[in-house]
Each structure stands twice: as C-alpha cells, then as structure tokens.
Length: 264
Image (cartoon, rainbow, N blue to C red; front, side, top):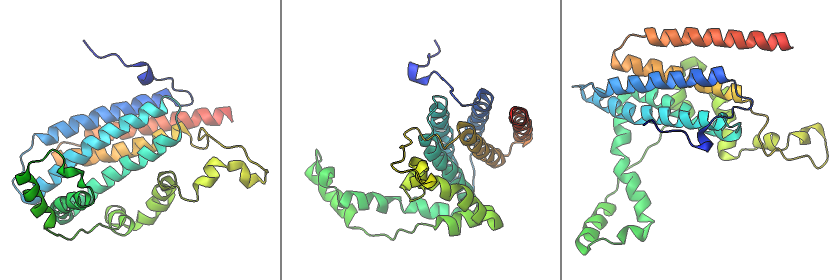
C-alpha cells in the first residue's frame, strides 16, 4: 500500500503556484532517475571513480533537500526554503567543481580522517563504552596529523564553474541568500522593513513576507535543471529530456508572466 502523506505533508499552497510546484517535482523525479542510472556505471579511471562517489553523495542530497524546500513552500513558509535553496545550489556547485577538478575531489576525500580527528580531539565522549584496547588504538589515530585545505567558494568554486559570470552569480544570488544563513546585516531589512521607511518602532515581520514563494521555487527549478543536465552528461545519456524540461519551463514562465501582465 502506498504511504499516505501526513497532515504536515499535505500541501496548502497559500501563495505558491501549483504549476511551478508540480513542475519542480517532475524535475526532481527525472533527477532521481538519472542518479540511479549513473549509479549503475562502473568507471575504470580513478578520476571518474572519485567524481562518481561525489555525484552519488551530492546528487541524492540535491534530490532530498529540494523536496524539503517544496514541502515548506507548499505550506507558505518563506524564510527556511531560501536557506535550504542555498544549500541545494551549493551541492550542485560543488559537484560541478569536483568534476572539473577531480584532483580537488580526491583531496577532499583524503581530508576526511583529519576532519573526524579534529572533532574527536575536543570531544572526550568518544571514550564511552569502548574497550581499553579500542581506546589505545583510537588515541593513536588521533595522534596523527594531516593538513586540511578548504577552497575559497567565490575565488575557486564560482570562478571555476561560472567563469566570467562568477561575480554575478555570487553577488546577485548566493551572497543575498547567505544573509539569512549567517545572520548578516542584510537581514535587518528582512525583519524590520518598516525601519527603512522611517517608521518609529517598526512592526517585526515574523513570516518573512518579503520572500516570494514563486521566486523561491523558480530559483530551485533553475538549480534542479542545472543538476539534471550535469547528471545526464555524467551518465552518458542524451540531453533530450533536459531540453524538454527547459522548453516546458520557458513556456510555463511565459504563461505566468502573461497572467501578471493581465492583472497589472
């Protein structure tokens, strides 16, 4: 028997356009199929193996977290989807970066033991319920030291993937969405918008109404389409299905823009 959605999963939609929502779900389904196809491949080259590992890690994250974005938007939540959208965007950005620079992809994997060591060195709870022999062995592991390097997201990832358009992508989208993630000064305008109209004791915006659900789902669709195109290329499949989705999205955008023009 197919699982029925719980009350919290049943969309109420609110201000979210249902056609955009359903289209995004269609792209997610196609993305999942492309991930499953790529997982069946058995690459022989080491670089290809490393890229496949990252694709089989970041690809499912794109699919999973994008579903959470749509769930929240379908319940008229505004801020959390923007935050998660940024994560989905970064997953596909990093995947494309690693495919272009497989040496960086391999380097990141090699750094994983040291990252766990850094956590465990300051968290003594790892000793709980371990045998004396295991504690001795783990202490020896923690005594090892490796360097950890992290790429500059704007200077390395954005520049590698987007080239001359790196600054535009970063400043127009990623940097803007990062305000909600990190609590930068830009979020003051989001929460206290009336303050900028010189209204004393401005009303606090608890619902994040400055963020449009349709804009958020549109951003998500662009990210999903980029991820789908990339996964299709990795798997060696034709791009016909991606081109079909691009055409459908262009038609949908045109229809929605036409409705807005009629209303205005």
